[in-house]
Every structure is written in structure tokens, then in C-alpha cells.
Amino acid sequence: MLEHFSKIQRLVLFAAIGIWAIASVVGAIFGMAKLFGALGSFALCISFVVFLTDRFMAQEARRRWDSQILTQTRMMWRYYRRTEDPKLKDPTPLAKLKDQITGNFDDLLAAKAEEKAIETYRYELMFSVVGTLQWGFGEIMINLIRGI
Image 1 (spheres, rainbow, N blue to C red):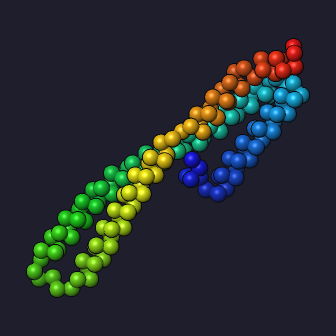
Image 2 (cartoon, one colour; image 1 turned 180 degrees about the vertical axis):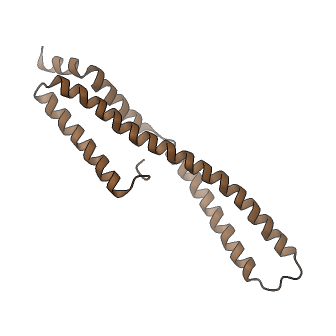
Image 3 (cartoon, rainbow, N blue to C red; image 1 turned 30 degrees about the horizontal axis):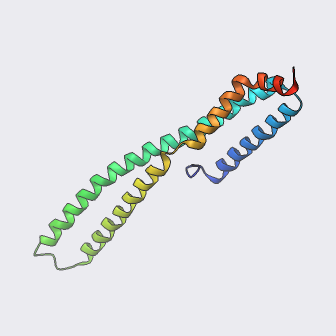
């Protein structure tokens, strides 16, 4: 889920989640209904950042996948053409091309596996639901907890 964030971005994100959690608990304990409700919008914002970043990176992975398929096909065609060339005596370019094709194919498989992993948004959705409920019903929740 957070593999597309740099280390510093992850730290900022975890700090934001920590601030949200602590402030929500404090708001609930001390009956600060407006603060508690407002923190729901903050949680929703955090989930949007994570969700949209993952969504964008999934599109980039798909674009990379499509591009690599075309590149892979062209390289295989060139490799095939070179193997049929009777004048080619030095096998070094063929070995290099074979290594490139193998590396690209491995990259293609890794990109496809990454695409499947990206398509799960359960944490972002869960955080969005919690944030939306907290934002919309936060004051009611605090009033129920305090007995008002």
C-alpha cells in the first residue's frame, strides 16, 4: 500500500495518522465534539492521499506494462532476425540481446504482479469510512458518550 511513498513521505503519513488518532482520543475523552468531528475530515484527507497515490501509480504500472510488451516484441523480432543472419559471426550482441529480453520479461512479470497488489484498496476504504463517519456523526457520538 505505501510502497510508492519515499521514506520521508511514509514518516509524515504515519505522523499524520498518529496525530489523528491521539487527537481523536483526546477529543472523545474531553468531549470536544467539534474537534472530534473535524478530525474525521483529516482522516478522509489522509485516505485520499494514499488512495490517489496508489491509483496513479497503478496507472503508471499499466502504462509501463503496455510499453514493455511492445518493446519486448520488437526485441524478440530483432533477435530472431539476427539469428537468421548468416554473416553474423560474433555471438556477443546476441548474448547481450538475450539478456535484455530476459530482463525485460522479468520486469513485465514483476509489473503485472505489482498491478495485482495495487488493486486492493481495503485499508484506504476502511480509513475513508471511519473518517466519513467521524466527520459526519462525530458530534452525535461524543454527545452519546457523554450522555448529553
